[in-house]
Image (cartoon, rainbow, N blue to C red):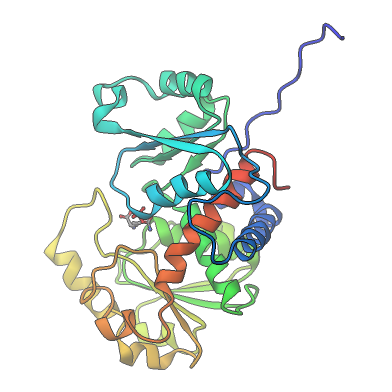
Length: 318
Ligand code: CP
Ligand code: NVA
C-alpha cells in the first residue's frame, strides 16, 4: 500500500443551479424522471431497488419554516435507502450563537451531507466553505435551486421542451424568481418578469442569464407579459423574513394571476406556484384550482428532484 495520503475530492455543493451547470442539471432531471417512473404506485417510504444511499445520513438545518422541503428531503433519503435528521435553529446550538464554521466541521464528522434553509445566502456559503461533505441550499433569501429543479421536472413531464420556452413571472422578485432566471441561462428559455417599479430581480443575475443566451424582460404591464406565455408563475408577495407592508401589497395587486390574465397566455400554458400559496392574493381560486394548475405535481416532484440532487452531490449521478 502506498504511504501517500488519499487526495479527497472537494465536496460537490449545491448552493445554486450553476454549481451543477446545465449538464449537471440535465443529468439530475434524467435521473429524477427514471427513478420516479421506476417506483410508480409503491408505498412512499419503500426504498428504491438499488438503495444507492444505504447507510448515508443527511443533516437538515432549518432557520426558517418549511413543509415541503423538510418532508421531501426526509422521504427522499428514505427512498434512497438512507436517513435524515433535523436541526431546528431554535433548539440547536446554532440558535445560541455557535459559529457556522464550527457547526460545519462537527456535522461533517457525523453526517454525509448537509441541507440548510436560512436567510442570508452567505451563511450557506460559509457552511460549504468549512464542510467536508456536500452542502445543499434548501432556500436562502437569494435563491431556491431545489425548487426550480422540481419545477423543470414538472414542465418536462408535462411535455414542455425547455429551450425557447416563454416563462412569465408576476409580482415580487424573490429567491424563486432568481433561480428561475438562473435556470433560463442554463437551458436557454426566456423569462418575462411583470412587477411594479422597485421590485425588479437582481441585475447581475439577469446579465448572467442573458450572457448565457436567455432573454429576460422586465415589464410593467401584466397582460403584455402573459401574451403567448407557455408558463405562468407567481409566489407569495411576502417571503419569509420580510415585513408585511401595505404599500407593497397594494403595488402587487395588478400582478395577481386571474382567469383574465391566464387567457392572454397560450391555451396549453401551465400555472406553477412553489407553495405555500396565498389564494386571493397572488393567484385567484379558479386559477389555482383550475385545469392549467400543476402545483401539486410540482410539490410532489420536490421528492424526486431532491433524490437526484442528493445523488449528484454524492457523486452517484454524473
Ligand atoms: N416550496 C417550498 O420550499 O415549500 P416549504 O417552504 O414548505 O419547504
Ligand atoms: N419566496 C418564498 C418561498 C417559500 C417556499 C419565501 O422565501 O418565503
